[in-house]
Structure formats: C-alpha cells, structure tokens
Length: 190
Image 1 (tube, rainbow, N blue to C red):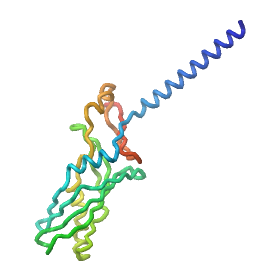
Image 2 (cartoon, rainbow, N blue to C red):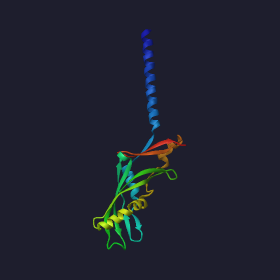
Image 3 (cartoon, rainbow, N blue to C red):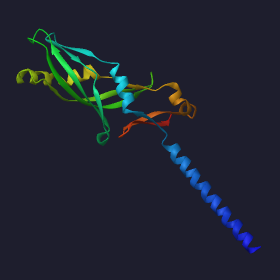
Image 4 (cartoon, one colour):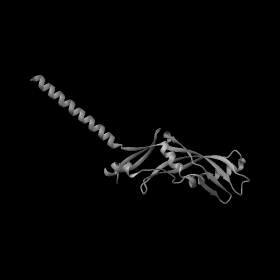
C-alpha cells in the first residue's frame, strides 16, 4: 500500500511538473508569436518596383535598377546596393554607377505591407564622372534616396498569413532583421 501511494504521489508530481512545463512552453510561444519573411521573398517583391527613374532638377535623370538586398541583423536594418545610370542634359553621355543605402522597416496596416523607411544613403559612386560631379550627386544623395526608396513595399502579408493571429486579437508589431530574413512579431491589438 505504501509503495502504491508513493507511486501515485510521484506520478501525480511528474504529471503536474510536465503540465506546468507544457503551459510555460505554450505561454512562451504565445508571448512571441511571429511570422518570418525570407530574404528571397523580399528580393522578389522589391524587384517588381524597379527600374525607377529619379529626375534631378532638370539636369539629369538617375535610372535605378532593382536593388540587391542584404540583411543587417546587427543594426536591425536592411541594406541595398543597386546599379544606377545617370544621363541627361548636364552630362555629355550616360554614366553607370552604384547606389548604396540602408533602411529600417515599418508595417502599414492599411494594406498589410512591410515598407522601407528611415533611409540612409551610403554613397553614390560613378567611376566615369569627374569627382566634382560625383560630389554634387552625393550632396543630393539623401533626397535621391528618399525619393527613390521611400515607402517601397518589400512584402505584403496575405490574409491567410495572419488569419490565426487576427482571430486571437493580435496584429503585426515589431519587425526584427535576423540572419534568415525578417521576423514580424505579433502583439495585442489596442
């Protein structure tokens, strides 16, 4: 009888501990539900938004090609390098170069998209232009970066991507750049 009681007590304790561990695991998973968007998906979506032409005060146009995205998890941002062609009345011929930027991301609830914002220009580089012209382009650089990439959509969440979270009263919240892509955390709706 004593062995049976010890067995029942031990079994009940193990079940209680197992249940508690399961609840903690579920609560831990519940506390940070998320949706991951791989880099390849981001690259596909952004490619549909290019090429783009950005006029520079009637002097010339910059024609930007689709950027090559890179994940920057250490600073929670994305980087993009794109080929750019400068041509127009102020330049005697077309000049090819590169355009490098970094940006953060934000969620736009109206159309369920992840968009570029807080854009920082790295540098515009044109090997065939005179240094003074390249310096002029770089002086306009932040405005050009803002005009060319402001609010570029990198991903659009489909209703089926968020249906379970919507039903639980959650909405997309913080976006974290990881080595695998973007992780969109879900938080309680206000």
